[in-house]
Length: 233
Ligand code: ADP
Ligand code: 5GP
Image (cartoon, rainbow, N blue to C red):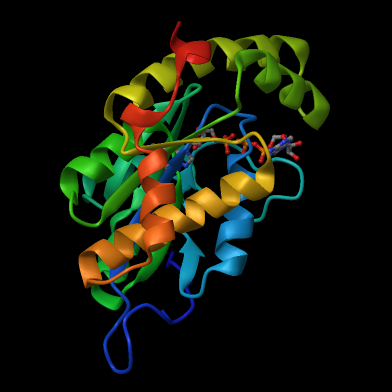
């Protein structure tokens, strides 16, 4: 089981590797995180997805080694025992984990690793690698809009949708307490532009220089600057 990734490009200048960034994206299910993450990786040189391991079964057209490493509970436990996970968590009764090799390789080679993981896992990455991790909570503008997107996606039963809406509020409260940034995914293009600005501004901050527009856009997404009353009120 290995992590496949393109060679890092850009951001570091000739001969020097691009600085590593562990870009953690968390969101309640249906917020648009997968859509955003896919577009971000397509458009960002040197960015790649971290492929997590999970004990859940593949859904639809998901492929082993591409969407997830699909493991038996016994194999997952063996990796836990060997210390092969950077973080792992139980979500909706199944286990999910990020391979330590993915984080270590990114820190060695540079580039942007994008993690689609829950807030429990994101908090662990943030605590272990505080200078490389950038944590971003993605939210639809309101819980009602989340419900509309979940229903529009037509992949979940009524009962599953109710469960996801209840889980969303606790995920938001946990993320709002510790994540660096919050992006309201109202218009997809705006949300993507903000995510790109955050990633560039954070890399520039570490490497020196940077664009004032990116810095301002990123600052406006700092969690203390975003109105979360629709979610937490
Ligand atoms: P997640 O990965 O967070 O569960 P998805 O990326 O599957 O969410 O998005 C959930 C649904 O919402 C999809 O049908 C997607 O096309 C739609 N969606 C994503 N972003 C937006 C947006 N900004 N406005 C309207 N619909 C969106
Ligand atoms: P799904 O089963 O819908 O693909 O994912 C369910 C949840 O598990 C999502 O919130 C997703 O972000 C989270 N998840 C996926 N991979 C990981 C992982 O490696 N670690 C953690 N902590 N959560 C993960």
